[in-house]
Image (cartoon, rainbow, N blue to C red):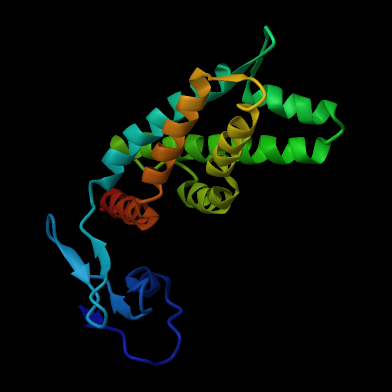
Length: 219
């Protein structure tokens, strides 16, 4: 790896795209082209900088489609069913939002709706919009805007926080009523795992793949 020596700030976009910083010690290197299965390591601390992942986007699309299916199931079926002295009630995610609104907690209802439905769904749809054309060898219109939109919406998706809150609530309610986990609860758990797996993919791989496609189309 070639270290970048201290000097004036780099302002050229093409040069910036070729730089990579170690997430462990912040050493900066120029990105090199790797062969299949190769990994680049930091010369200072030995941490992994990046690995060859030209085909990573092909593995990302099945995850996105799986996440969309799990998302639909999670919102279409009850999260939990409670039996209190013979009276059974079912709760869905949308039902929880409506209940919060009915209890005059409109702001909380909007936050739950946005962080557990709007932002996660928006991110998944944007990912699908990018990946499907890329699989066919095309760069979709508005690629850069969509990539920036994904980066901006990702921190607002808080399904894992909602999942932890549901689990804590179920434990507390189990002392007062019979709690039966619904299909959506298991689906939510699987969805959180799939989304966490999606986060392991480097978005810069999509940028580089799109740039290669655009360069090939200009020749």
